[in-house]
Image (cartoon, rainbow, N blue to C red; front, side, top):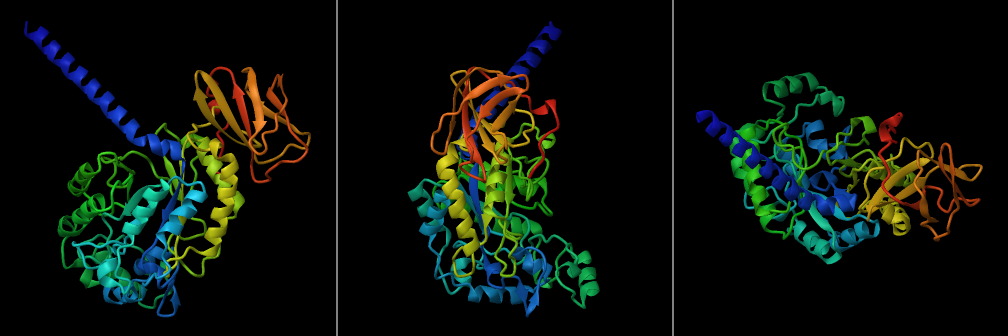
Length: 473
């Protein structure tokens, strides 16, 4: 009888676990629904670092702009002087959000607080914030939240939960001083940072990290999740020095926004969040594991504004990156680093407009799509939608074939329609031993990527792994 009772208890436990797992998956899928539909968003890195814009005491500091304090080993008191020059009088949140919407972006994530610890919002947890430390004296996030609601853009907040180089007790990733510039005191500074867990200024270590988490990080996240309406994303970054105990305190604040989604950077591996975040790269097919993912990427070489960085990606690269990412079932979070006066760099504006023009014609090849079921394509990328048992493939052609015959490998389903999204021209199709052949017009309507909307009967089996996986662009 005891064995029967034990078996019944075990069965009930397994059944309860199964139900709980199913309920958790359904809840997550519901929260992730808009994000999977969106596919394209804007990242914004903005803060005090836009004032020095890559220079300290007349010295160019190497590497990305928002890390200037760490890379240049700038003392806390010196860095805080930059805030007195941070007066973004040209900031127009409405224009920013409208620009994102017109570029075809569906959500926006802004650095509410980056590693320099500076909050773009009014905070009662630290005076190192936009209202108390700058001549501008106004919360930058409130008008952004209002503009996002106005234009139907989802709003997310980036928050550096562990690294904080100004608020005492925050962590600091240890970086070699010489990587910032040829500082003659590099050896001495490096010895100090080694002995003080990456910190270079005694002012940074007057409190413990536990105090920082309790007194600054947790209260500020609560402020972000309470004072700005619906928050769609909490984008954690660099879990330097984090413990599971610290992470759990921060994770508990998410109850303030039941529909929020988070990334995988709070604390690995026990806090995986809702999606993975490859940075500055597009994964290869062989790296994908079925989990949701988002590539975040700069338009030039830096996240935060740096006046000497002119290494801009062209519009072709940005659009083809977007298509490559969507073809693998991911999202693209494309960064803008505003200047200290509150304006976007001209190069960012021009590219956003050009991407927007392309998206206006071809956006349905991105929004709500799933990964391509086709093997690697030599001429472009593919995305997929399924409805009522049938399939729509969006074929984005990068390289227009000289003979005007486009072969879609491994596709044998009957075709119900094949048209160009640009102009709506109908295209003839024929079956061949190599797959479906589509007859194209003489000239590509769009030299960056011309999209063919191909509707076929039935489901298309996944053939992505029958050959070599497509590499990231």
